[in-house]
Every structure is written in C-alpha cells, then in structure tokens.
Length: 187
Image 1 (tube, rainbow, N blue to C red):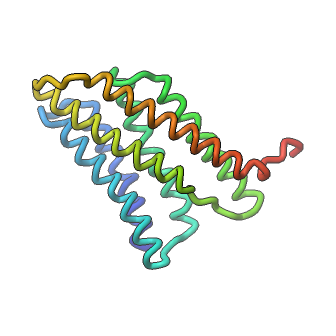
Image 2 (image 1 turned 60 degrees about the vertical axis):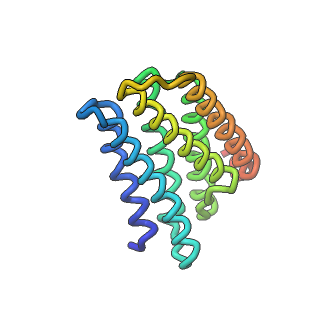
C-alpha cells in the first residue's frame, strides 16, 4: 500500500477519536483536542492528494476511498454539531443528501464502465471550504467552552455551514450533470 493510501486510512482511523473528543467532555480542552484531530485529518486529505499526483501514485483504491474518507469526516463533524445544537439540521441534510447521491453515482459509473470517477475541482473547493469552516467553528466553540465570550458565534457558524451547503449542492449538481449519461432509467 502506498503512502497516499496510508494517509487516507489514517484519516478514517482518526474519525472515531475526533467524535469522542467532540461529543464527550473528557477534559476542559476536549474541543481543542477534537479541533487538532480534525485539522490533522483534514491535512492528510491535502497531503495524500499532493503526494499521489506528484509521484504518480494515483490508484483506484485511493480514488474510491479518499472521497469516502472526506465524506465520513465531514459528516461526523456535521452530525456532531447538530447533536450539540451548534447548527441547523437543514444544511446538514442538504450536504448528506448530496454526498450520498454523488457516491451512488460514482458506483453506477464504475459498475457500468469500470471507470472510477475522481472528484472534480469544484468538489475539491467545496471540501476545502467546508473543512476550513468546520475548523473555524471548532475553534470558536473551544474558546467559548473555556468561558470566553465569542460575539456572533451562532451567526458566524450558520453562515459558514450554509455556504458549505450551497457549495456542496452546486458541486453535486455539476457532478450529476457531467455523469447523467451514465444513468439509464430503463435498466
């Protein structure tokens, strides 16, 4: 197994630890620990892609698992945020619906053509914006958990999540349009 794929697997392994520190107040610094885990997991996404492209280590396994690892990390954060009352469930449902739709379409395209469809540039922008937004929200919530006042925390969080949902919906529509021909309703 090559280094980019190992980094992707590391990201998957980090998710339960992130969720543990996000949802359980093990220490006063649990949210900061969750933030560090999430940020490191997000960095593995950046690194695995850069290394895979630079050293021509792109594999079908990586093209398949990398976007799923990203989705699992982001969904874990968003569902956790909903559970903690930090965000509305509506943008989270939009994001989850898009992710399941794109994942299902990837499977259809792969099963029909044998081609694994990599993420497009708009999907990469969506992922980067969402991950940075989630890091920002975790940072603000961590500061708040230590007793500091964070003005406009609810508004900032809502705007970031809704922009993420909008980018997610648009990138999903672009992806669906690009690969619509792979879906044959007669089959």
